[in-house]
Image (cartoon, rainbow, N blue to C red; front, top):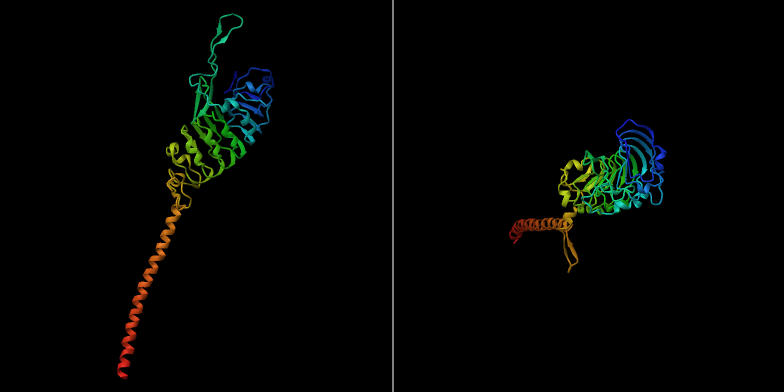
Length: 334
């Protein structure tokens, strides 16, 4: 590993890194490095953790080799100037992130390696460490657990839609895509990320409705979609019942709990739709629209009855007046 972040280093990443055939961790975070993403590494499948946060990297993330970065577990490219669309081709080959790791008590590098120079002896453990944002806090990981799979692409200039294929990375624990220029709808495939704990899509240009499938993410404790162009009712159920209003603010079209804006002009929320009663024999669905029509018909019916009653009274009065006037005249003639 090479970890020399939090310095005043300038310039570009040295191409000599290409000769490091067993490099697993690269940390140049919080420095003044410039250049493009190091897709030129000869053995990128060995790299598990590239941390390039808070530098001057720019441009699109270029294509990599067929099996490049297939063992990637954590990637932090936040606070740079990367452009273009999110790298779907990389999401396809990040095989390690597709597996839910059950090794809760194991850490990267926490193993005894054999010493080939002296039989029956071993090297001591070598701990990988890093600093990364988690739930809004800058945390120092003195040991990196195997279960921690994370993507942090926040504070860049990525654009386009969030690809559906990102839902294949079922081992993800952290997904940060905030402060970019992402647009389009939030893919419902994110509901496949069953181990996800943190999801931040805030401050983009995302539109449409929040997928109700996201309520199945029962592990999510940190959620933020604020300052987008989302609309419609906020799904309810499970963890969504615990999220606060500031995690949804900045979306003029969003409505429902926990926001103060009520959903008067939108269809029923997923929870309300579940209360619809269906009559299998008649083939009718007694929903909100049915009762609205009933109220309208009742209104027309009441006005009809009222009109008949008034008309009857008026006709009767007219008849009495008619008999009274013309009846007297006829009696007088006789």
